Figure 1 (tube, rainbow, N blue to C red):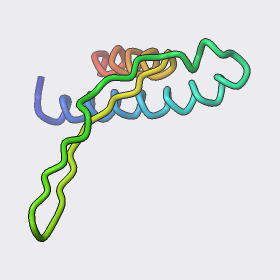
Figure 2: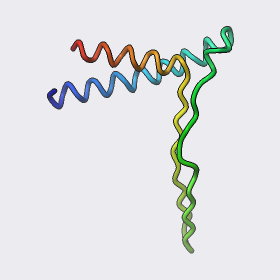
Figure 3: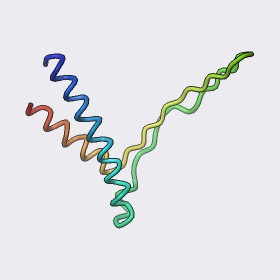
Figure 4: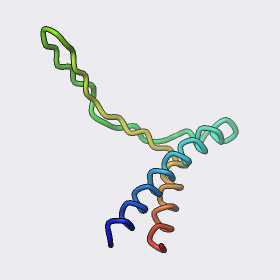
Length: 80
């Protein structure tokens, strides 16, 4: 896979995850199972220095729409 194709594939998967997240939240008002999902990550880590405070952490929230559209865009990116 060339670099341009890989970049397009990654962009499509990220776009699918974002659109799926929005779709899951919108449809979650009508279908509660669409809001259920996985929430995992690394808790906040705080580094306090005398002159500044640095806080790092990572959280990933996935619902059914996020996973579905990300997989769909991944499938379509393999066709390109």
